[in-house]
Image 1: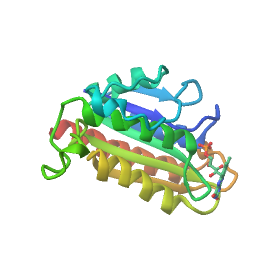
Image 2 (image 1 turned 30 degrees about the vertical axis):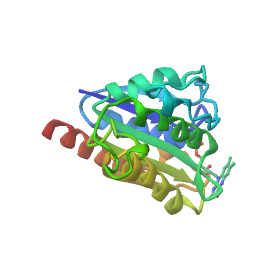
Image 3 (image 1 turned 90 degrees about the horizontal axis):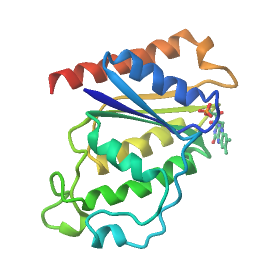
Length: 194
Ligand SMILES: Cc1cc2nc3c(=O)[nH]c(=O)nc-3n(C[C@H](O)[C@H](O)[C@H](O)COP(=O)(O)O)c2cc1C
């Protein structure tokens, strides 16, 4: 069993990424980190090629590897910093590009009456969504992550971590770390029940 831990923060000391890794570590199974500080993920160009060519995206960057990793993962954690009361641009690029997965011919249809909406290969995989913010806007950001990864990709979201941390380092906030650990344990439990 393997968890894919999407660390959407781009700072080396990203609090978001620390919570994603804490949750992944607490799940009690193998996990792999995708660190946006080192990955090149370009924006979706809207070319629609993926819809015509079995989910193949022509943009040549690190998203190509991530497509395979998303499909292979048994569970997925997605973390984004809160920027301007929402998810970050980098994480939105990742989510936009993930549209290509809908056209790989894998998983249940989103809606049998709208086949053009594609299939959902990640449907039913347990997931956790994570955001951190300095002061305000994390509720909107976590709602957005839930909508994209739960509502659209149909991950089974088992826990949400949305933490306002001021200018602190989460490593100095034991109660925040313990909430992330609890979310990770929930993810591990959901995974083992599958
Ligand atoms: C471009 C940008 C936009 C931000 N927007 C907000 C915001 O809307 N509300 C807020 O309280 N903090 C905002 N912040 C602060 C971040 O939410 C906060 O520092 C967060 O913990 C950063 O996550 P990271 O440690 O994972 O990089 C913003 C920071 C940046 C760089």
